[in-house]
Length: 70
Image 1 (cartoon, rainbow, N blue to C red):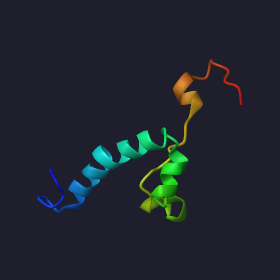
Image 2: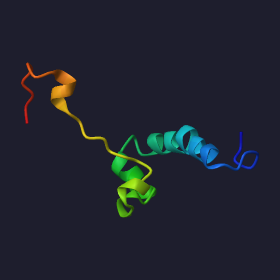
Image 3: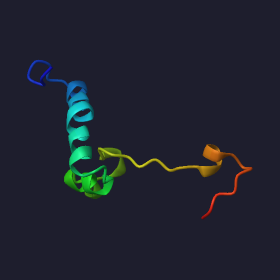
Image 4: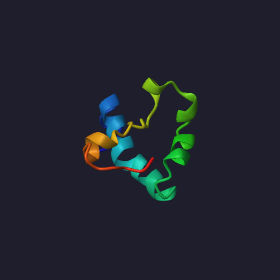
């Protein structure tokens, strides 16, 4: 469904999520830094960025009994 038929922010978000981002992932071989450059995310405040890098908690992922190299 094109944006022309349903001109809402929710539809625009869906187009980005379902069509544009997958194309960028394929084109840039999932190099997220380059995708951020294309979207100009490096110059935006975090709350206005398209892509958000989540922090990873290794203890939450693997538990505290596993030693993970630093």
